[in-house]
Structure formats: structure tokens, C-alpha cells
View 1 (tube, rainbow, N blue to C red):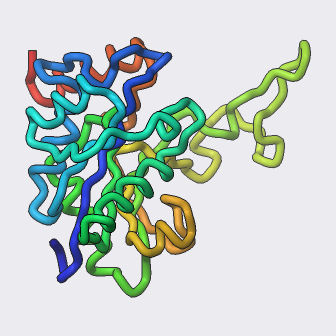
View 2: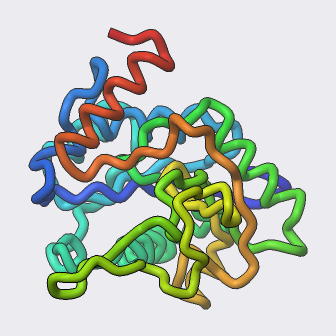
Length: 237
């Protein structure tokens, strides 16, 4: 709890993954991938409940082993490739409501973004709490080095600018910096999340990540990059 507001950390982790099968429980530097997110949430001074929403029995077993709440299995229709994270979060919040419990703030932690600093979650919650009247969400973002002004798209046999409205340049420094919302944390007021139906509500501010945190695991190559970064940054083997 922070500023009298209750907080739930939700970690969505469905069993099906085509890019890297079984990635949520794949060992990463000695722990299953999902364990890193669970431990980050449990290490927060403000998160009251840490929930894993999953349809997978093995994921549920490992989540419980690392002391996350797993009070239900996510319905199959909310665990398809087409299902949204928002629908899984709404389902989780509804489960708690039906059991007489509600939360003022949702902290969404994507297990595929395990490179959180120990202070990230609490710093973001403190920012939201201190700016409660001005903002409804805090999003973790990192500067991208593949700037949109340099990106291209394929149009038949031709190569053309991806964003034609941006100045054509070979130096990203010639344009304003661009930022990507990495899944370290999305922190949103619950009422606003449900009303606007997005983790990017109109009144959003940001938490700036370090360069090394700008990785998300979608396939084996991402996993190997994250593993190498984690070993380097944390002195792990």
C-alpha cells in the first residue's frame, strides 16, 4: 500500500509461446524466467498482492513455489494469440472483486522483461503517488537507438522511409529522441484502466530506464541477449 492506496502486481504468463516455447519457465541465470518478475514484485515495499495469471499448470506450480498467488487458471479464450493482456488483467481484477477484494493501483509486470533494477517498481509507485492529481499512469520507457527517421519499409521491390514525414537523415541525433515502452512495469490507477481500456491512459507520465534494460524476450536470440546482459550487470554465472 502507498499513500493509502492498495496495489496489486499482475504478471501475465500464458503457456503458449510460438517464438520460444516454454519461455516463461525457461531457466535464466539459475531461475525460471517468471521467477525474476515475481521476486521483483515481492521485493516492493508497496505491492500488497503478487498474482500470476496463467493457463499453464507448470507455470502455476513454479509461480506458487516462488510465493506468487495463483488462485485460478486463466480461461482458454483469454490465453490465445489474439487475446489481449488487458483482458487477462480485467479477468484477474474481476476474480478479486467477486471475492470481496479490490485494488486502487495495478502494476503490470511482463515476465519477458526481467532486467528490472531493484528500485524500479517502488520509484514508479512513488512517482504516481506524488503526482496522483496530475497523472493516472507511469510507464517504463527506454530510448531506442534504431530511430524511426532511419527505419525503412519494403514496398514491392523498393526501399522507402518508414516514416516519410520525418526528416531524412543518417544520424539519429538530428531528430528528437524516440522512446519505447519496455515491459519493466506499467503502473495504472485501476479505475482509469477499466474506464479507458488501455495501459496508456491520456494522463500518463514515464520512468526512464537504463540502456541495458531495453530488451524483451520474444525468441531465443532475445533470451540469449538478456542472459548475457544479466550475467554482466549482476555478476551472475
